[in-house]
Structure formats: C-alpha cells, structure tokens
Image (spheres, rainbow, N blue to C red):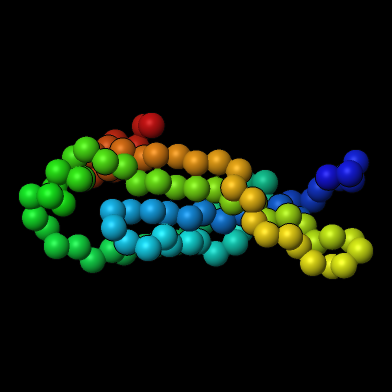
Length: 100
C-alpha cells in the first residue's frame, strides 16, 4: 500500500457465492480486518435425482474479493480484486459438518 498504514475502515471485502445453476450472489461489502457477512441467500430448485446427486458430490464455490481503498489523487477506488476462493462440499453443509 505504498508504505502507508491501513486502518480497519479501509479494508473492504465481499463474497461471491456460486451454487448449482444459479447466477452468482454477492454479499454487501464489509469493513474490518475480521469482517462479518450477515447475508442469507436462498435458491429455489426442483428436487430430482440429478439435483440430489449434485448435492452429494459437488460444492459451493465462494470467492473473496478485496476492494482497494480510494486513490489519494483521484478519490476513486479501482475494481475489486479476487483474493481467495473456497470450495465447500455440499454434503458437509447438508450434514451440518462445518469442520472443513
């Protein structure tokens, strides 16, 4: 960051969630070194054999994006930058086993 200190208010992130055949959903931006995303997504699906097999064998993709602080010169932030990804096995979520 050019040798400057960063405060928690300058750290902004959001998550993008990809599930099944739905469009990506995004959380609101959160500020902090330890952000909390109070977001609930719901997806409407037809439960058939293909969908059940997907739940047993696939995952939810969660991407983490960082939003750069505004540039001192022009007061605008550049676009979001992907800083991480996770593939969360759906079967563990269904079974309530959140010990990834």
